[in-house]
Length: 292
Length: 244
Image (cartoon, rainbow over all chains, first blue to last red; front, side, top):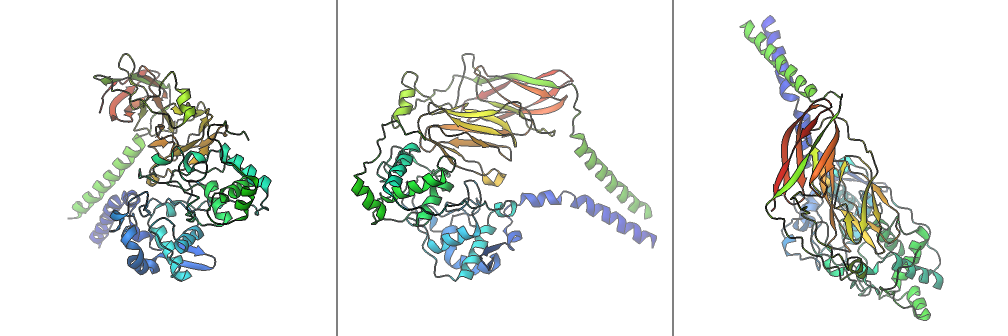
């Protein structure tokens, strides 16, 4: 009886000694995807579950994004940037299309929208064929690849004030913003992606990347509503050279800039007509930038 | 038989006590703070500092008309001392080295001043611009460390950007508009110093104890040395790097 007791105790203490360092080992295995299998995504009143997306991911996403979500699927090799950007590495948790400030995680809704919308000028098609539930599950699956989603919360979406009326004054003011913050350094004075710095641009992983050409008729990557364009330069496209201008463009000025950018675009618009009527000239890159 | 199990229990307890002692032993006594100083030199000839073609941005080219810009991968003084080397206590276990002054990383004449900004974990620093041309300030840390990359524009007259980093890491900083602009945020834990143009450095406010001191140069890598600091005394650690 006494002996059994002792054996139990010595075994317990021995086990404790062995088990003590275990929590720190567990922390080191960041790539332990299985522990993140319970990841959820919340889109409105739909709850997505990572586990339920496993099949869809293997069938539709894995060829580009890879089994481990690192963007090294078997066709990734054949995608040549800048014409064909490489698939996203989900393990880094860095995303272009966000409603949240630079350096923060996107919301579930942002990822949900990207899956549905696809990304123009890339190999990512629209996945509007999925049901909303399937897309929500895929969002949860995308999130389960990066430890950032367990350690951080998504950023707070930026507030976009209601869109004002387009006026000639606003378009002219937008031209001043364009000159002041020097969008033309990359995008060119007429938005043709031919600015002096355009040719040397690289993304965070050192791959060549092209600035957006406003004039060739394609859609901006993160959606083509006025609000989407507003969001792009106020949040920045993380992982790319496109910075956030949130500290340097006031919300009201931001609308002016949106209207001015519309004048470059191939599609017919009220802004384009007004600019033509005004005989608006492109900004002069050699003129001193207008002060705020 | 019974003795054997007793023995197992005693051994287990002894191991536990040893573990505890090791953890507690890391703490150093804070009294009579000393310092660590030394010089960092480069073995052999100083590598050529490649010139920068700034003609794509007339503002930058004009600013460097009389003094052409050069890549600052190795900045070596006349006596062979290497500037911009960060020296820090790599086995530091005390409290963070609280900021004594405001750290500023300035964009001046399309270069970063200083080229390497050392800082403690969670220490606030300011990114400012003195230029009449637009920059974007784009540090690229590894998000797995807990440091999250961001990218902010700084057009002429822009307000400073105030930030800090969560984890120790040597973070590359770039401006995508001016691809030659390249600098570093050296985030370390505890006391640190950066070498001056002669390669000299002094780490102040070091409590007495035994330390591992590490010197980091952006291209040559790291070197370590053991240093003992007596109460109120000074330790010395000189480093010699080989250019790669």
